[in-house]
Image (cartoon, rainbow, N blue to C red; front, top):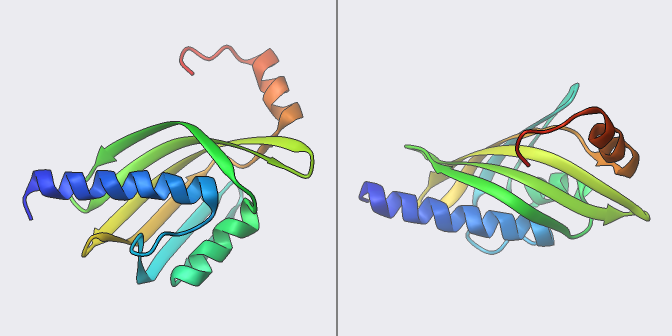
Length: 138
């Protein structure tokens, strides 16, 4: 596979992965059957292997649909890096987080996934941050 074909495949997988984040449904072929996920959040780390366990890990943290209003994609020699901002509603609360995903691609599917999350910010934390910090870029 040429470099441009690999980038096109990685870009398509990244777009499908965002759909997975927003819906909680892993389309067929997104992950290899034995996909491995290493998830790091503030002061904790979890791992899962296999499509069902990876989806269950995601749903345990974000059980409902979400929105990814911003993302950045970078192709790598083994797959891609995806940076996202995610927002969702749960238990009458608005939530926000930023995540970085490093994905390895094998045979056109994600085979390994490392996730780095800021932790989930509720409405009060988002408001406090807005009062205390002036971001130079969104």
